[in-house]
Each structure stands twice: as C-alpha cells, then as structure tokens.
Image (cartoon, rainbow, N blue to C red; front, side, top):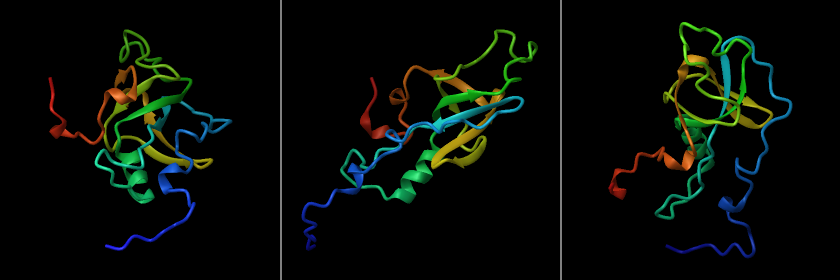
Length: 141
C-alpha cells in the first residue's frame, strides 16, 4: 500500500487528549444522591500500534468502567441503613461502576457520567491498575 506523505503534519494521537482538557469549571450542581464521574481517557493508539478513530475512543470512554469522582450530591451516602460504614468514595477518587450504568452527559466539551451513590462498585488506587479492554492474551501471574 502506498503511504501519503504528510510533511510536518501532526499525527492525530499527538493532538490534545482528554487528559489535557481540564475538568469543567464550575461543575454542575448535583441534587440528591448523585455522583458526577469523569471516565478515564482512552489512548489513541493500541498496544499493537493501531490508531483508533475518535468515534471509537468516544465509545470506549463511555463503555469503560472506571472514572474519577468530580462531585458528590448533598444527600449521597447519607442513608445510614444503606451505608452503615459511611461514604464509599470521595471527590478525586477513582471508582468502578457497571458498564452501562448512569446517565451520560457532555458538559463544557467534557464527557461525564452521572451515577447514583449505590452504583459505585469499588474504589481503585489508580485507573491504570485496570485494563478496560480485558486483554486476556497478556498473561497473568
């Protein structure tokens, strides 16, 4: 296959990524039991060197199951019967949630997910500890 010479053009994966886009300010006000999550960003190139189109990255960002907590509603985790040990997460934590959970939002050019407080499955130290693509060929110890 013949490759087209692009001169000094910047490749797509070198453009601004979601990591470089700051969290929206001010954040929307959250009523009730809601938690505002920002899904982790998706790399533009796979381990094998395949460049992912923006539409695929967008879909993967919404289908990933880990994100950063940006805001917590005023009533979240206040139910002592449901949460006898207190909050499951705090602002700044990385949490896991079900694949199709929550309401997807696009706020100030940033993709966000609005969850209920009981939709948080677990808290993780860092999102890189999880493989959202579930690549089972990498081997395990």
